[in-house]
Length: 323
Image (cartoon, rainbow, N blue to C red; front, side, top):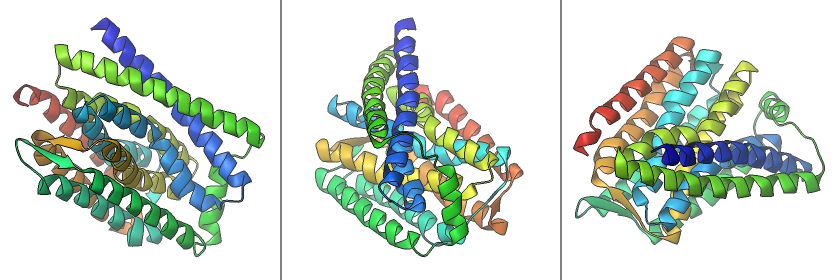
């Protein structure tokens, strides 16, 4: 047990360091190449903060640990909205931009629903399946989303663009930033490998690997989003905080599931399909009234989100024996 916990902890540390290096290096590199700050915030930073999920899920998929690959994504999407967004709102109330309400949030819910429908449509023998064709569909949808985001960025107000500009610190030469990206990728790959090994070891002794993926690994891979959102909220940059959460959830399905299932079709366990995927979708829908009320997420609403997450995790642990 001690060795598996050591592997898990070491993997989480490498993921945190790797994700931070990748986000900083990629964001600075993109800005030096003339990419608008808003596009960097909604795409490069969102993709970078989802890189731990990509590393873990792809590694798990290659090692035929589909439960970890899928549970990591579903658990991360749930924790992003309930835990990360909740903690950020508790740190500082956040105004919600109309552009997020008009497009990004509805698109996120649609993406979550499509994932569930894809898995449900192929349900048989106690599991669903995300096929290679569906994985490719997700990747094409990701490209379309990136293109739309780039075009929409040109219509955003100067105030929003300035907020993203202020949130991305430019420093270092291009060579240094390229090295930072490479370092981040190496740390992510090694960290993901350690996490999968540690999680499988713990699952064989104590908890089901789905529960570990939905909780410990999901929270660990959400650390970059958590850091980005809380810091942005404290700095009075709500567009970065909320855009990062919504963008990361979209990337988790379109990029993480898309890449992993394109490499190898992903099996979705019955318990995840009929318990956790509906929770993920319900949480996405719940974010609508919370963000729409006064176009602001208050501290009380943040506390409500965190409370719901604690209830969800407690429920998982208490029912683990019945999985």
